[in-house]
Length: 459
Ligand code: NOJ
View 1 (cartoon, rainbow, N blue to C red):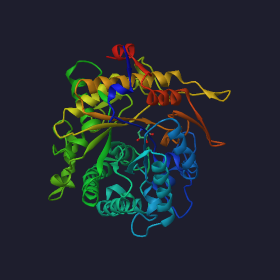
View 2: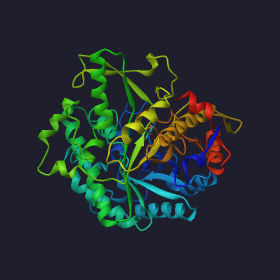
View 3: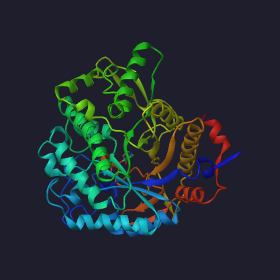
View 4: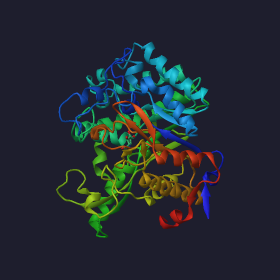
């Protein structure tokens, strides 16, 4: 049997995702203030290929063609983020009209082309001025965030109906405030725990602000997640895997659902008590209309007594004889099915959207074409797993590919190419990859195919 897009139903949301810092460029034009990422990339040795997002895909100037491209590919939904420091260069107070005008143009362009905008309010680019006051570690971030979110909703809520409050809080707090390999490059548990708690509070606060100002809005927030297996059936590996699962997959979603932090399985999370104020536990809760699930790979975890806080470590995919992506991640389609099941098992989750899934492979531009059969296969097999989950009763209502086009992959720079459109960063020429054409045909026609074999083989 052949499956098609119709098997997902007429209301399923198909789309592509991007984020401001990764594509906009124009880092210092029209009154934009610097963000933590602008600052981070200016420091030596932070980005593997020594590049910056200063120009990226120049989407700031090319947005109209890019939205045209999305339309020409028959993609009905576009998820992008707002750069806080374009709207509020100092993070609070003064509103930069040129920045507002840009997002007005972008949103209007989408609507003119009948593409529904899905807007992420925070995709990691905190205004630098706020980082100078401690950033996410400082509890005052709640007030700053409230100001920013309400400003955006008042400015754009007449046309934007679908909002996502945060993008992957585990990643920006973990990589940015614990491990230090993302902006702002801060390390240590004493920074991570308050940053985590304030992000959790802002996640629900953002939801409440949107709901108050725009009761008809469709409100979500997004979570990174990866299925986790223990390296062996030994109890100590199984326990270590459970700790990592609590850290990577449960830490931010459970407080929002009223379950609190997963302290039983992740003892280190008890340190949050030092930062908990009266009412925080209630204030962490918000009934999101949807949960954004972002999945790429799985992790295998082994016990390691010497590893601080977690007593465990991730066994790298390259040591495991599995298919790898440019990021060194394992291709593991079944993982998205498992994570959909896991999120769906929470009673309070009303709807799940896959707000990111995709892959970086070593794409080559040859004679004006990019043949990327491995990405086509990757997307088909992951989408098959989404369908399998849906058929088994999971409330999954959308799927967005990461990413529309190759872009600035944070600390990895431009080497990993995640796009279904190739970008020539010298000329800013966009070249649709075979995967982009495949997605486009799949979305257009009820005859194009996810084949049964894939559905079975990954099952
Ligand atoms: C998750 C992040 O949201 C996005 O910014 C990043 O580029 C992709 N994953 C790929 O790593």
